[in-house]
Image 1 (cartoon, rainbow, N blue to C red):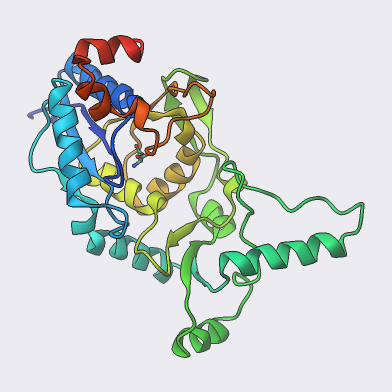
Image 2 (cartoon, rainbow, N blue to C red):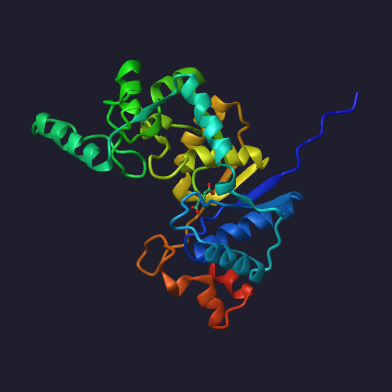
Length: 297
Ligand code: GLU
């Protein structure tokens, strides 16, 4: 018998074309490409462009220009999330049909107001409302507890809604504990996932289709990604991705969460910081070798 083909390693750099790349992106892209080379694997690109208002073709082109200037080459065609909404919707519909996702009707303002009321009712002894690992208020259980009839009525009435994962049910369905293999710049080894810390994460927004968590999970599988190399700011999000991978029957890549490049003020770089933008550095005469040095490679 012919032995099964061993999947060729595949890595991806997945920027959002909603701004110019900075040094933090350069580190991520270079690490992905270097590791793909070292593993004899593929280097793929993915445009995380679901937010059609903030993502533009100009920013997308600027990303290609910057990456080419860095000396990188990637497989074509590039996967654009905006072209795969059907795949994310199919994954969402699957979760809805299995009773693992529910319509969430509260706006951000309503969540805040609800939490303020609950905290006030708890008095001085009341514990503060739990926050997710990103510091956002966890979604209240109000909508999760609605009956099927009520949900249908509200949807039929045209009430704006997102879709959220019913995390408790999801974890029951996954059974046992989830973990991932981490090889990055922080904690390494087998990491126990803690998805409950996130609460009922959003899967589909009322104003923009699909969420980061759902699309990244579907895409990594669709692109055959074996090694996810990305910033340490997404370390805890991996817990959510492991849940979705398990529910959707998708393989788990190995993860490498890399150190972040901080600005002079010690904060994470953001796309609006012109001084660390790659195109600005290029215009000042920097070379790709300078960029490698600047990011410590
Ligand atoms: N699009 C995300 C970002 O620009 C990266 C997503 C990922 O690597 O999982 O931060």
